[in-house]
Amino acid sequence: MKALVFAAGLGERMRPLTEHTPKPLLRAGGKPLIAWHLERLAAAGVRDVVVNTSWLAPQFPATLGDGSRWNLRLHYAYEGPTPLETGGGMLNALPLLGEAPFLVVNGDIWTDFDFASLPREPQGEAHLVLVDNPPQHPQGDYRLDAHGRLHHDRHGPCLTYAGIGIYRPSLLAAWREVIGEPPRGDHDRPRFSVVPLQKHHMAQGRISGQHYRGHWTDVGTPQRLQALETTLRDRL
Image 1 (tube, one colour):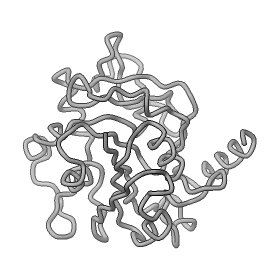
Image 2 (tube, rainbow, N blue to C red):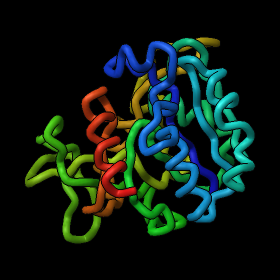
Image 3 (spheres, rainbow, N blue to C red):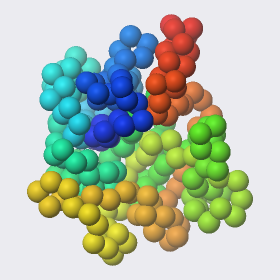
């Protein structure tokens, strides 16, 4: 299985820390945030990882190299100065990801989730990991039913999408139908979020999920990065 790590964000909420360092390369527990993912992906048997980049893109290969130190092969998908968002980023990376289901993880989260616990293939178009709602996102995103299916109708308590999932490339096949004509990034590449596609396939019962109750944090502000640093210092 291959994996895609989203690392192309501008890191605006993390300024001034991200003025000279991309958010996934900020350090916590003695290593870049993205390095925690690479270690866990390698431990789960992943060998090829695509890292999408935009802001300060040259720092990624300069810091991470070719991935051999983790027994990985790293591939960099540069999106240009304007990030293509999650859906456009997936679409742009598909030539490197191939035709089999692939693992996706946001580069600006920290978690002790075991990637090996994910199914190798989703039953439908995707299988997403959800977590308890953090203070900054109390309303959550999706409802997980007793059969493991996800819904966006909010007819009950919702959980927060963790930024981790297994996706089939076919999830993106309907992007023009669902998204319409999105804004364009560099080289006329479409720029759009994957969320409308998630909801489109949820409505057809084609997205499953699981609730992870372990440690997870969205490192979205300097304060949360400092809190994570404190937590990891206590654990290590």
